[in-house]
Length: 382
Ligand SMILES: *Cc1c(COP(=O)(O)O)cnc(C)c1O
Image (cartoon, rainbow, N blue to C red):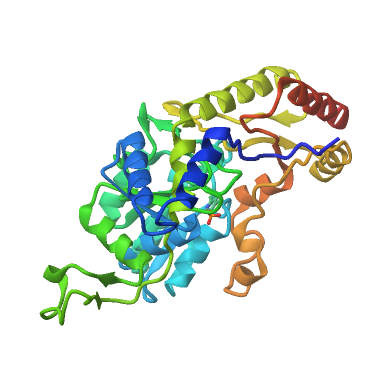
């Protein structure tokens, strides 16, 4: 029997046809499909502008750059995230710090954020950007975070890598009501995939234009933006230092086709989560995911807390179920310890890490497979 993964893509014949049609067309990259996909994503989340790139990591980098993050700036995020969230700030040379999590939602705590802001203001070390991560697909307390952003003058980039199709106060994450830029990932385990890929969504035209520039060498063919008259029709100018972070049309075709099924994907994830919730209701010594009022998760992950996590993890793996741990607190990584972070710095995150276990959840997980996961989990915890 093939192991059951914790997450995986769901690729249809239509997806394959969409990719093949690009392969047969004139442009594999920088053709019309990326723009089309960007338009579709923006329309889906009800945001104004979307900028696609070759990964969400790249998108985070250009989002921070567009907001002006540099080596004299400070960026705060949560320790319970994938390292990319903070690494992208380090690419800008910024100082990274973390805000501990809420012990119920496992998201960056708005209370802890406020406490930390009060202290930072006193010593003149306020962050330029704060990056809440919608962990597992459940939106953070964005209204409060955004209110703090207005009060303390920082910008908000939401790392929505897990949260395409999630809603906050009945609006899709990405609509930009309570942040400046939203970032989505299209890695195969995420809600939809482009193989590798990501997108930024913003309602700020200027930020969108900057991110687009950063994603493609900061080069323009637009005469109006040039410093002097073009030498001829071949002419372009590089106006800043950008990167080659472009998404290909091959990837965008897959993403566009996948996006047409996103509602079904999220619906199925919600169904699986509900089945887990119900079945686990009377499991002793196990904590189910808590849902914040006014939010609807995209259920990228279904995380339970168990005692003796290592034993339960090993047991599930021995049964062919590839449960996972999301995440090792970022400040535990040797790279971050070397920057001065220590064990004990973020107690809620560290306590969470001792017990967390991600169970399989993805659209093509069958009821039989889920029953099997539940059976094995019952054996492991009882
Ligand atoms: C997956 C992920 C990323 C990075 O996404 P890539 O597209 O793989 O670069 C960043 N942040 C979070 C929270 C993620 O889960």
